[in-house]
Image 1 (cartoon, protein in one colour):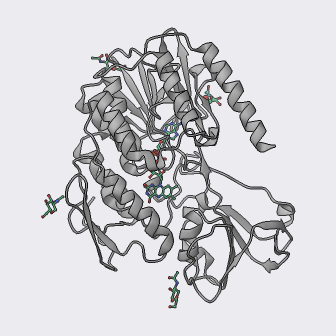
Image 2: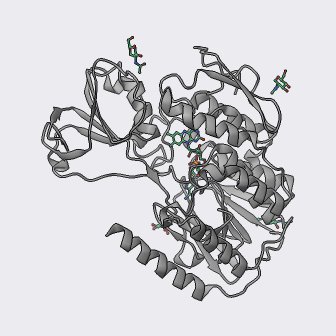
Image 3: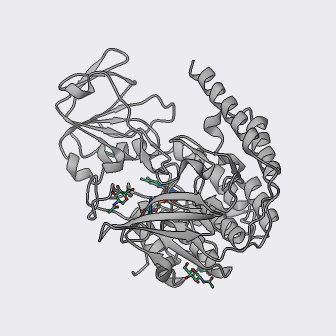
Length: 455
Ligand SMILES: Cc1cc2nc3c(=O)[nH]c(=O)nc-3n(C[C@H](O)[C@H](O)[C@H](O)COP(=O)(O)OP(=O)(O)OC[C@H]3O[C@@H](n4cnc5c(N)ncnc54)[C@H](O)[C@@H]3O)c2cc1C
Ligand SMILES: *[C@@H]1O[C@H](CO)[C@@H](O)[C@H](O)[C@H]1NC(C)=O
Ligand SMILES: *[C@@H]1O[C@H](CO)[C@@H](O)[C@H](O)[C@H]1NC(C)=O
Ligand SMILES: *[C@@H]1O[C@H](CO)[C@@H](O)[C@H](O)[C@H]1NC(C)=O
Ligand SMILES: *[C@@H]1O[C@H](CO)[C@@H](O)[C@H](O)[C@H]1NC(C)=O
């Protein structure tokens, strides 16, 4: 049923797409004014390359800060300016891929930084990047973009100033959307009886600190990156930790109070009944049920279909095929940070007109072929995943940008394997890139989480 609905959706979408795309050229003139939405990792990367390539640009950032989701914010739900919180960072988080795969090109962490730094350390790194490349002066903070529309041959970008609450519209020739990707909008499940539950339910987006759960009876729902990570962080703090999920993996020993349960059947007032009929009483529930896309500011007429699960049609996972003067940075799924970084370069090169796109028809054909080749479900249309190195080769050839080396994909494979076979200790390694193809790693269970960045 779900499948046939999806097929239907795909067909509908193909139909409208094929009808709408004229054989327009993918020509993008050098932007006399480019606008970047968001000053997180992706937006700052784009700003750096636009600056390098001589583009006249402005970054619009909703909060008062750079760093996006990497900034820990003690406010829950809404931030100090009344905006829905844009960060999902929590205490003691450590990154889940080696820092070498997260670094901006040519801007390494200081020697001595842990291979898997804390979230706090990564945030410092991003702030240092903005400072070193002198990007802050291009950023207009406290501007929440509320609408992007195509009007009379340019983009009209409207934002609300969060201090005065006034609305303003500016013109842009080029728009880079860097307001977050697949880990942005919390996805909430809905279970029978949920409203009768007397305890507290949150999404991992609002989880901050293990201390909030000391000696509590806690249920974690889901075993994606957040669910597994919180299982580690909470197992020795809670009175009881129930973990409901259906992931098959090499489960480590968490603690004596940890118990694995199948999926949820229903809530009661004081606990949860699982699919196997068993019951557990709990005080707190944390839905680690993942995130999706959200671009509430995109007008219907911009030419991309955006849902929580996909954004389409995009050429090279970035360019809005119907309006090639709009591009997305960091929207692709299952990517390492270095992919966002490469996309920032590609998109800035496009805004600077350092290369020309193929015609819209050719881009659309390429997009459909990619979908077709993999017999892909629409849900996977944004996924790069294991194709990371091919992608680096493609976009660098097309745009004449630096080719990110294959060694990054080699690390990706190793990390993906190791993360699930040794969940608790997989970060106890250090890495060194030897050349474009090879890396060295060695066991190094440093406990200090050293982060020699002062900012
Ligand atoms: C808890 C968590 C842990 C993660 N851990 C890792 C990890 O270990 N390794 C890894 O590679 N990735 C990790 N990720 C993925 C993470 O999404 C990326 O690392 C990265 O931060 C994405 O950067 P970004 O710039 O695309 O988005 P964000 O960091 O979300 O930045 C988007 C920026 O846009 C601003 N913005 C949003 N909407 C608007 C608007 N309408 N107007 C103006 N500004 C706006 C926001 O305020 C924000 O500053 C993690 C994600 C989460 C949620
Ligand atoms: C750069 O953009 C600003 C803001 O729109 C504009 O005022 C200025 O004229 C532009 N500069 C150039 C050289 O195009
Ligand atoms: C770290 O050390 C290596 C080897 O000594 C050196 O090549 C590299 O430039 C250093 N990196 C930084 C950021 O200092
Ligand atoms: C500004 O825009 C927002 C979002 O579109 C709207 O809700 C609000 O009413 C506008 N405020 C003013 C003062 O026009
Ligand atoms: C919890 O503590 C026990 C006993 O010290 C230890 O064996 C286990 O690894 C800890 N769990 C985690 C997830 O760190």
